[in-house]
Image 1: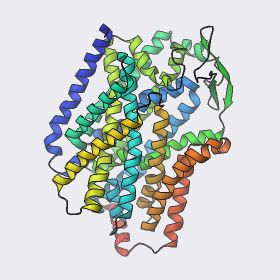
Image 2 (image 1 turned 120 degrees about the vertical axis):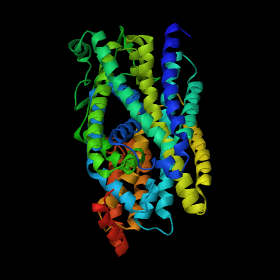
Image 3 (image 1 turned 180 degrees about the vertical axis):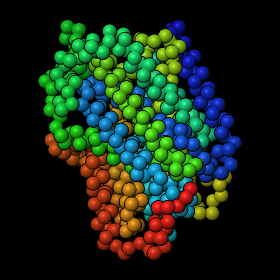
Image 4 (image 1 turned 45 degrees about the vertical axis):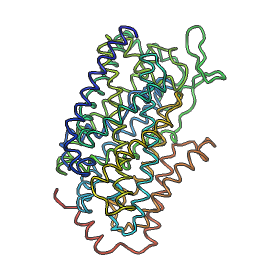
Length: 520
């Protein structure tokens, strides 16, 4: 190992030690009850709620996936995706947060999303609970794999080590950490990690612009790439039979720019719809101390997201100016952030910046594992199969489930050529199209029925798979992001099936009205 790599490792080990320390600190409190372990006893402050929600949401995708897209094909895809996410973040905090905080308390003091959906419709046969728990297990396996790919790519590029070995090291660390402290440790460390992430983004962006000779020089280096800096065109790298970009006379070769029509813009903006169904974000709404504090959280979260997304997109563009031929595949391009940190900064500082990627990965993967574990242990094991199970039994099953989910995610992540952006986009669509419509109608439409909720969950999930694997490959107007058509289809099913079935009972409707003004 070189001296610089050793210094980077020192910074990262120190950072990891702090994160583990947080897990150990909260371990005793987390193990007092399943409510503390899964929801922190509804004790989050506004700053922790905001930062932890966004850090767990963005993951390593923010520091690797999004800059990689901008580096590979220019501003269009990355910019419109970022705009959609920023708008979705704000609207989610504005219209969903307070209603969910109140309603989850009124609906049997629900501590997981499947439990909330089930209690919302006063289920006796736990059909909604079971379906929503299975959805969480399926898509969080995919989500966790994206985090493990990030770990593998990061460590293998820094230390020139085997990708799979580094990936499994990342899995081990995340599992041990989540095992210890539960939701409180996760949320508290996510607060710190959100700060590290935005610092890392801004540090690399500023250093890269200075290294390139200023903003004008960056623009000068990339302005001649066809479609690279256009919002309604997209750059098209020329690739050989192996899928690698062609390099000629020391410069990357690009084909003529491809059109980026309004349908593609709408497709990318549709990323914002995903927020209404993201368990890792929605749980923060449920866990805050007081509903009124969510106003401050909304402002904090929106500012953080705007700064982070803008910096991530600009790093990808700037990276193409600084290192135009360094990465010749779409998958490899996702290393642009770590590459720039390594060449632009002192190894100790670069190690801290690399810890920013690790921070993003940890803050997401621990959320995914914890929520998936709760879906099985709390909702399926205790809620369906063994209703008399006590808290200790639930906690044991939860930790076993956590390990199993991590192993499945690791198996999915074995391919080092996986593209983080692609993995995340599929899982994001899955949650957005299944939980998103059901959540919105649950909070805003009193006439929604249990049968409507089942129809929305199933139709949204099925359409994500059908569109992604059967319809989208047809191209043309069918090449849009699967979240948009699946979200629309799920919403239609909810409305139609609810209107065709008997209206909810007076008790359910009275509870809906109570949740509007309930003080908590």
